[in-house]
Image (tube, rainbow, N blue to C red; front, side, top):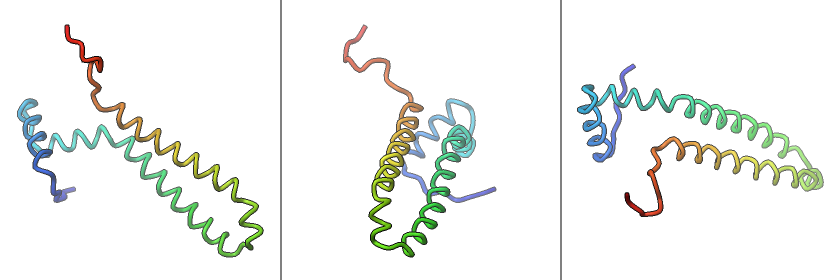
Length: 110
């Protein structure tokens, strides 16, 4: 499928430089990058879709609940919120770990 994408000039330069090194073109390099990210992107999209579906169900149930019923579930809502933030932090950490890390952060050189 063909799509039009607007990129930052810095990213275009990086894609062009990488493509030159690998004897490919900009589009091939972008496809390769997206293919490598596909599993992580798929999991993220599915998690957001599921969260959106669950939020809709919670919104409907909350609209029908009394204040006493809402107060009774507040601790569970707080727990879910913390777990959601923890999951997002794990996703961000996985993304950061996938990037090339420097050999050393001590500043020492050989």
